[in-house]
Picture 1 (cartoon, rainbow, N blue to C red):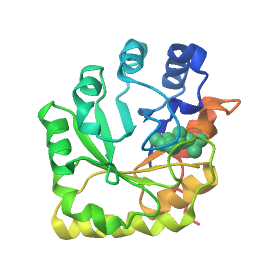
Picture 2: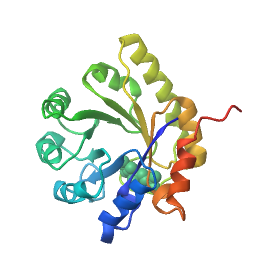
Picture 3: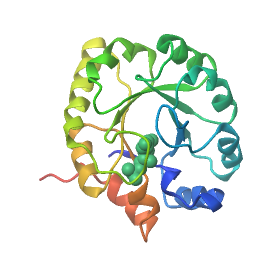
Picture 4: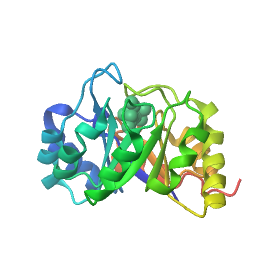
Length: 220
Ligand code: DX5
Ligand code: ZN
């Protein structure tokens, strides 16, 4: 059964603390926090001070998804703000090996995100340096976009390569996740479903999370 990581990008920003508490009570496994710098992606969202102010509202692990250029300049701030997993993009300008080491040296888990047009093979040399692989199923920048099914084979390819290298890190998928696309992703082997709109805009958050968690479990 996949874990569910609601993305607060789709939450009500005027009362984020309450939203985080609500989604925690609704049974989320992680809180997915989308950090955008207006440069790596066209949108600007959340910074480390916001992450810090949310920390007291939940015991759930924070996944900070950094869609920013030169993430190494901000890793320390996100680590200190209470992030548990810090994800950086393989496409971002940086010394990737250094960034990943920095995250781990600060006692946090390092995630590597791969955009839809980027071949998954580009991540293979880094599988030993990471604790999570993030397969993007939309081009990052905004919530509420349509799932790109062409990325699905990347999950199986990555899992096979992990086996070949004798490592196994969870694979998260992010963007356009609904019960239908979540089903496809879970069947393809995704371990964590990040979902913004389909959780935060649902009438019943608890039911929405339950449905996502059951993705991939049916026999047919
Ligand atoms: C996209 C973000 C996603 C997004 C998911 O740039 O990284 O995490 O918020 O939102 P939905 O589920 O609405 O596509
Ligand atoms: Zn994200």
